[in-house]
Each structure stands twice: as C-alpha cells, then as structure tokens.
Image (cartoon, rainbow, N blue to C red; front, top):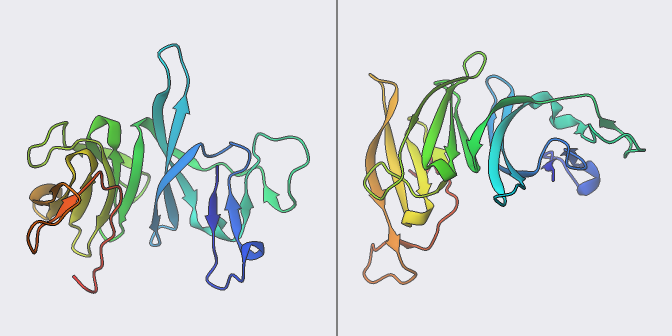
Length: 219
C-alpha cells in the first residue's frame, strides 16, 4: 500500500514519486488533505488487524512533510535490497491511533483546523493544527437525526469554513456552518434519501455515497 505523488510536469510513471513500500507506512490509505500554509500532508490510514474476534478496523492519521513530495519514501522495515532512491529513514508523525475506520480528512488552512471522519464511531474529530496538532473536540453520534451519522465517509470544506459530510449509511449529505463565535461546526442542512431513481425534478437520492468535493468557484 502506498501513496503516489504525481508532479504537474509528469510525463508518466517514471516521473512520479512513491510514499510507502512493502507495508511500512500504510495499510489502507484513504483520504488525503494538504496544508500548504504549514507544509504538511495529512493521510487517513486504515489498519486492519486480526484477532480472536475477527478483523478489527483501527486507524490513524499520518502527518507527512510536504517537502517529501519530491522524493521516494519507503521500505522502512525492509532490509533486503530496495529500489534505488528511496529514503528508508524518514518517519511521518502519527497524529493519533484512536480512530476506528478513518475515511477522510480535510484541512481548513485559514483557521488552522483539521477534520477527520471517525467513521465506525459515527463522529467527526477536530484538531487544532496551527502549531503542533492537538485534538480539540468531536461532534456527531450514531443515528439518523440532523447532526447524527451512520458511518460518515468523505468530507470537504468551502472557503467560508463550512463543512460538507457524506453520511453514507443514511444516504445523504449534511452541511455544517462554521460559527465564528464558538469556532464550532453547527448543523445547517441535509440533502438526500435512499434510492436510485429521481421521482421529481430536484429530488436528491443516493445509495451509500462515499465521497464529496466542493466547487467554490461555482458555489
């Protein structure tokens, strides 16, 4: 499992860079968020571990230095000959190992906040990343009421700091408004219901949506 960095001038795989090699840094990398102001990359990494009770879906968020995008990094635990040019010594920071199936991450660069979907716990974890990352609060709980989730997955932010979250098993998208006074996200609206056919114009239906992207230019 690895992450591939594709430079804007890439003419093919020979120009790309790889982070991770032979199951060292990643098991199942999911969402990626980039903080250009602080030159960091946040990667949600799902860890599937076996046990007597079956597969456990633990997870973490890894913090990489953006400067490493010009390098191959990996094979940290591999002592046999490795592909040429790999940095085996670099270790990304582990933000936390407390997630249960993290699915995505989003960075609010202006406000210095990181949002991560803690999917199997049906909540969103929020970190202050202005200096050293620090957990500050979570919001959400399991259910289908406004502001509740059933296995949230993808999320994204608009320029105002408002958050859009894919509420996968509730078959909907929820919007939260960033409140300047409390610096918290407050439920605003939800769209969608289970289905694959649109019954009337403007009807919004999903079947287990996974990801989302915000187009600030279009609104």
